[in-house]
Picture: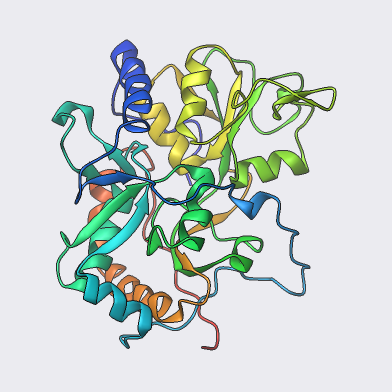
Length: 339
């Protein structure tokens, strides 16, 4: 994956910063239209991934292994077909991945790499890429949205890991990413290292970035507490990862830790910030998530991905990500386990 030297294009300058702030403020509060994105309406709760006990090494060596691809139906596939629409949990403010383009007006549809993949899944299961209902969910609501049945699947830059496979079922990997530090160009922060000592670092609640900071913070402050007591709510740990960019722009934090694929989009929105460090300090894989036990959905999504990797994936990458994440030749190869 490219490092900080890769320059990014997209929304720029003060206008880009304003757009990022306005986008965050607008799209996370307003309910969105059917067939576009809808606000999460089910019960709320915390993403339990960060608090789940990590699996032992001999229990979980390759969490990205998934069930074999299948064209078969099943009770959950049948229910989706009967409804006539696939309900998908997505992001709506991650530039290039799942976002509402402010230049196209408040009522335009969602765009991005994850949105294209979600439409391909809907086309396979229901018969049309437009037979889909998007529901915008914050980072820390991805798992609860699946558990309470608010959505059928989540396509939202969701990392497959050992803790999460105990809570939701994942497809095979469709993208490789890794954690990296985002900070102002003028900052003396050099990456995920001792230069973070004494700095305020923002991450999304329930994210793998937060988990990594819990393992090693290099002396950074990353929890909303002081001397063991709760501090300012949602200052350092936020519901949506883009909220960290806004806090960085306002000078409330010194750096952000998030997936480099997402950070690249944020740097495209605001050219005053950049990725720090030569490369990501983790290797992670995004997967499509569904409710634990919905094996028929997992198999069908894996079948979609088998076909998607052969052409549509590269087309989507060239359209949405190539300018920000150069040099990626293709998707990760699928890994399967016994059905």
